Image (cartoon, rainbow, N blue to C red; front, top):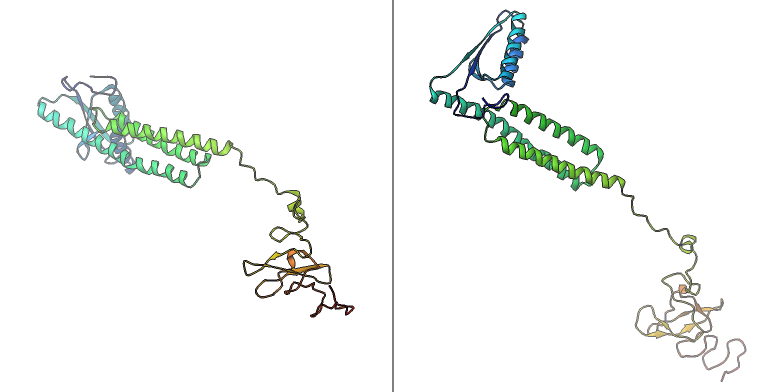
Length: 290
């Protein structure tokens, strides 16, 4: 016999407990309670009311408590300790115990990927938060509890046990990393957005713009050529009554936008001052200009 509750050496003589329970005449719930207890101990059912268990001290205590409860509730039961004379028959029974535990470990392994995928999904959504950590911790605790119950009734070292334990350990490590990410996300201050400049906020003209809004041409001296709206040529400046003029397109003669803020005193398409009539006379005095 190995450590308490475990049978580790296959060559040594084993003792078994043959347990029978009858709940006839007792409340219906008693049958369910007896079945759950024997299944939690890992009992191998040979018949509907007969199961076989290794004769370890912890198992014997649990079986005796169960039988006492069954008898007090009106049922009946018996526990017989025995040894199997046929080694082949015993080996077959041990294999059945291991197969039952392997099936339970396989269920744990089947559920593990969903836990890992959930953490990855929350990472991709940027939802590494304390609430998600707390929820995942509850899931991990259920895995550990489930695994612990299977290990307690794994008397003969089922082969899938190591893989199940490693998978749950990986879940714990993955959750620890997720928790660190959640801590960093909640304790790192957000990046500050630069405040707009005082001039921009007040709608003032920026320094060096010459009194024009951004995107418009700065003030120019009278007679200075200006870029036409449609072509690559430079037009000339035509004056207006406000003292500012518009540049004219060199091909079409159409004035440029008034938003160019161009001072007046420009010339017409012939290169003459804008206030002269054809023939070189001043439009106001009629005097020919030189």
